[in-house]
Image (cartoon, rainbow, N blue to C red; front, side, top):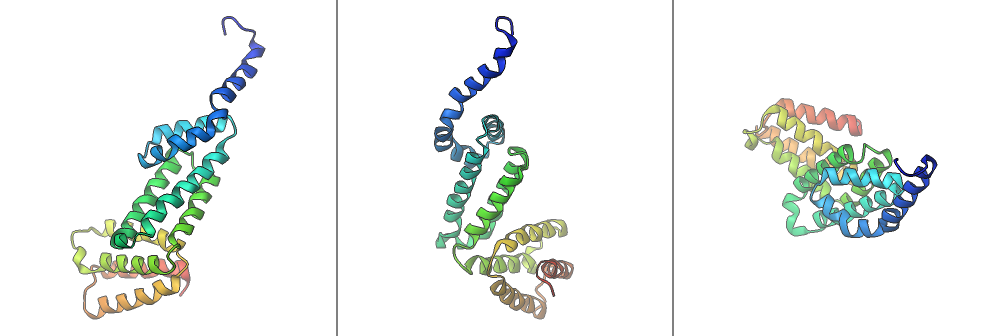
Length: 210
């Protein structure tokens, strides 16, 4: 501002961005992106998004997100030893991605669609197994063993699980298991809350029809 002609500002900034940023996009993504995502480093990811948008490199960032979700998700879904924690881990992973999308990536629509597509891919890697585990998870939550959970917390959990349910392709497998578990809960009087049971059925009705 003090020494140079004003018209040089734009080309100088463009050159600086090209040399310091654009040339190093692959290296930045290869060496830093996964670490930032794993560490849930909201501010740093926000900076990355802002800088990448200056050099039209958001497409590279979008592809990196897709690869990250598929790679991380695969370790959650494909590890049979961790089946009992799969649904909880997927819920945590999805919540983390949602907050990063909102706080770091400005709710970018393309990024939002990428997260949905990648999540749908990973949750169907093991055919019907996630559907079975989601039904089992709901059965545990709706049983009277969850007395320590408030109605609001239970309702929130049901809503979150419904998000996972939308991604699974084996909905008929889920339905068969859910019906069987529901019948058992009702016949044995094991439901934590009849209101919660009704609420979940109405949610499923909205998703799948009567």
